[in-house]
Length: 262
Image (cartoon, rainbow, N blue to C red; front, side, top):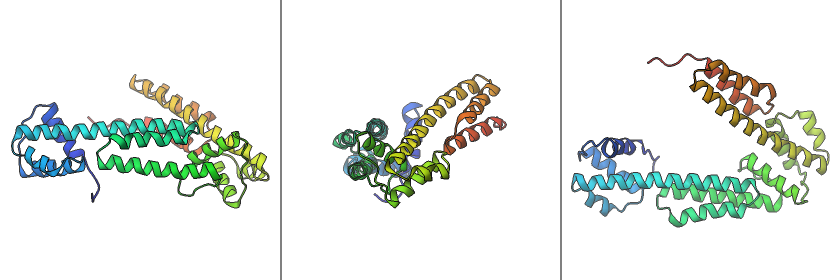
């Protein structure tokens, strides 16, 4: 399947026809859109051609296309969430199972491709878990968590130059100074403590940001802009991880912007 998939046009058509009860006019443009979208959700070409013989059967086809898009998106989101929680717990086999189960039922090629990509990433992460060597093609945070699980299982860090470089970068991204990181990398035990601090800062910061954003949005929606701003100021008073500080600063700046014109 070549080219980037854009399901916005079929979603708009489905909203008009299925939700707003507009008649489905089988123009050349509508036929082309329905054929393409049917192919993208793995409906056989002969079934789509048969459905396009009348507006009523084309409407059934449109409903089927939308259902496959929506159901597949929900399945993928659930699999990703469950796999993420299992990864965090160090259960990589359990994470694999989420996508293997999805592939057993999913028919939409895009979602199948995304599931296979996730399985490939988990396989690489399993290699990190087995060897203790970092993978430059994987996100740092997932590897940090796996390395910490190894540490908890009495597997000390292997302080190769690659591992030292990886931990220096991760420390900087967690707001730890170069001097502190360099000192910690002098031996496996202190490097393990550094790893634990990096992961802890990222986890605590993520939770703080999530809670602060929820409070900010509730106050903003209630019309209390000053209270909403204070949530971001309070976060900035304690947060040290640069990416979370940046998120707070951007949200604080957004609250100071004038509302869009009606």
